[in-house]
Image (cartoon, rainbow, N blue to C red; front, side, top):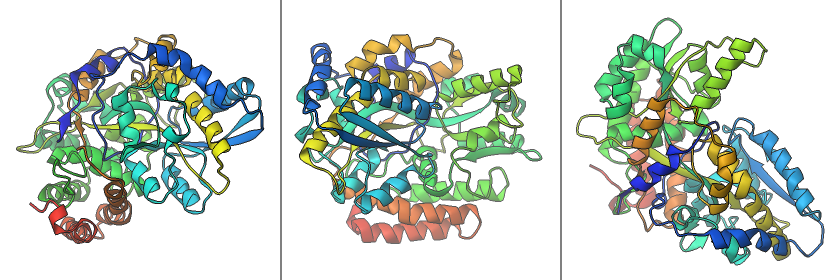
Length: 484
């Protein structure tokens, strides 16, 4: 059944700070901490378990591939790799840094060639693809149980398919819209009211029309290449699309709500309120900072920190600010809603997933588990959670997070995030790895390329919708699709 995330999770965000980025998702189970069990005793023994699993003494190298989860994640990974080698002298972490734009494609290519990294950051919605092709590793076969007990079970469930667990969660986050508060108010938007009560699609459309001037778009969204999936997953809530499957496990992107969403995209691009080309993930916030966009997505509460940092760099004139950027005040915003649609917010769980490759052995995989837990727990996880305005999903992170927290947050942004996190519509239970993989394939091979064509005016909303329906029937059968 489709569920709402527990209000108990609101307390997680209330004590958090900010920075970083996340990926899209479309399947899993509830992310609330309502049913979290005390794990202090397990957490206190998990490091011992990690040490014992790496005690063979044979030298080994573990590869880990990560996108910029926080702005300085590449630097932090180098630092943590050194700490790991000091702690386990026989083990070495080799870090492969990617961008958000190429991370999933590079991981897929490497996995298909039998050269997957041992560990990679991954959104839970993509796990099914690697379970189906046999490269994801069920970590319960190799990881000490005390390590697993460190994690809230409801968060760990997101990394689980068909009863097998394939990785460790780093965070649970929400994704919506962000904007230039001064521009929004100049366009007639009551930002405080929108943050507190939400807004309709008609109000949103009026705002982006007013905000589109000269070389400034009223609205931009990261939708270049694979990031087009973010538009569907996040902005889809506007039309009432909250997950790829409904409570009866029928595919939802084949329904009429999808056509309504595509028609809205077609209207916004043809009207010039948003670009008629793909915007890369790295550019959407930059366009807001340079005054070329009023509202952008995907956006998260954590971006407030990045914008404050850029504002400080402008004041310091030290050359580190975004080129041609201006000082702005960041506003975290909900996604608007069309007639008859209840407000909801897209939420996702990202984590570190273990993979097999041509060189994997049982002894090597045990060492991989040591590295997997090290990177996903304690101060490393606490740093990520605090930097992304979230609380930890494991006890060792919660124990360490206070040293990284900050209270320097805009109250309106914080209250909006607290409100929206209670409105995340969690995906239905009972999904299989095959369903997850088929949904991911539909997104990558049908929806994403069709979206690029729609933005460029090379297809119509109706033609794109017809293509999705046809492919969905082939993938899930007519009875497995929502068609009304």
